Length: 341
Image 1 (cartoon, rainbow, N blue to C red):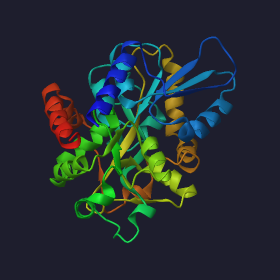
Image 2 (image 1 turned 90 degrees about the horizontal axis):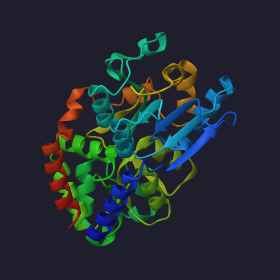
Image 3 (image 1 turned 120 degrees about the vertical axis):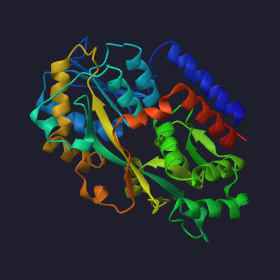
Image 4 (image 1 turned 180 degrees about the vertical axis):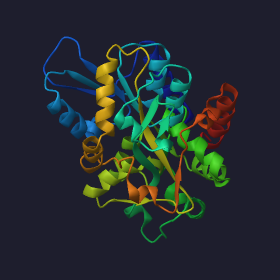
């Protein structure tokens, strides 16, 4: 596991050295040499495609380029001063607020942005457009004859009691590479002392470390692992609609709920068009498509906001604490010591 992760880190560094590592991309509208609007996002095309198609239908003369990259790559690209992107959407709230706090996000106001709840906006520079619970997902087959855990302590207890069953059978984010994974892990540490005990046990069981929720869910559906920890709930729910192999757990002691956020980079060359797009995803129509066709809970989703165990991650500068260089270095050292045994 140590050698595998080290290799991946080298690949990441190499990719960044030569530019943004694009995971997937799609163009909408008429063919043009240069896009009218370029969107850089951590949300998979499969999820956001209905929104993009609906928006492109409203503006048929626009060529829109939708690019998917990791949340960490997105941050590094905008932080480097790139002027190639007009809208940035990411699940890594901490990295997004750092961009805004560092003066790399354009201030934008409109009637639609004014309608967003105060907790979903930061200084009119960063806007939440969807909610995202963070969950545990298990393989039903691999949990046969075991109690289904309802919280992290029960999950930890099951892992400890069944090491043979769960050896090399767990999967989670590699927080060295994933901005979203790092956010979830640091929020767990802030919330519960169970986090480090769980991390050590998962490390002793040879947990697989990967880039993203999609890879975790693929491994579960292919029966390669028994459980995935800290998965994007919307991705899991979408898979569960067509799969009887997995079960989603919203931990009862707390289920973190993040905001997917959007900003307009200060160096965008198409700020007016970027504002129109931001208005659209915050509009009643855009929010309805995001939720009903994309499977992302809208920012006004009452079921999630009223969950008794919901623990919203606050959109404020408190998120910058774990981005301090020393704090980040210390956290990663402890996390790697626990997971890479």
